[in-house]
Length: 221
Image (cartoon, rainbow, N blue to C red; front, top):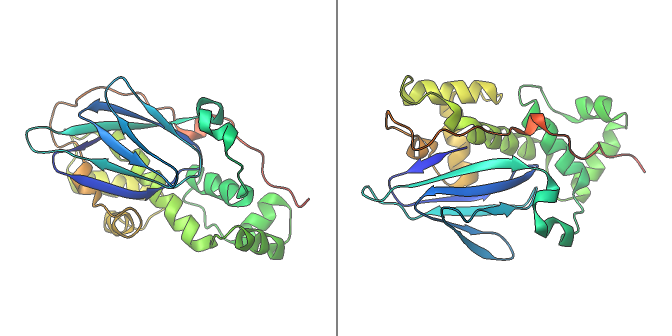
């Protein structure tokens, strides 16, 4: 997902249910997670582990803009995944479901039916993993819209139309709700990351999360 900034921007606590390759098309980006900081420059991408919060800082100016892409990749494309012991299997599975089908009314009853376990077990597992269902659903809807934002035709659509389109696709009430969610969750106004130029920096084909096979649903065992 190409993101373009012409001013200094810091995006905080992004999290996706899949590993993400961050490529710099122009300028550089500074990534930071709980363990390390990494500079990403053109030709030197970095893969962020799945379901891990990370920050992304774009030190752009009007004369020196920054542009990056985020692309979903399988766990095996992230060398750090092998060294990480994940304990949030249920939360990550829910995050993936929300990301792939954000318009559904995700709740304990729907998850209980989908996973063929009791609602009590669903709530208990998520609680044990330190996650709140509604907060995670909101986060992943916003993450899905954020990921899809740059697929809008920036030359043909206004900023408002682009925001409304991605918000609707992510199960959010409106473009305004999407903007507010990004401010609350990621500390950034997505309008600042829209490509406003009629000529894109580069054509990019995305590998969306829905096109790859991932981990199985959690079991009651």
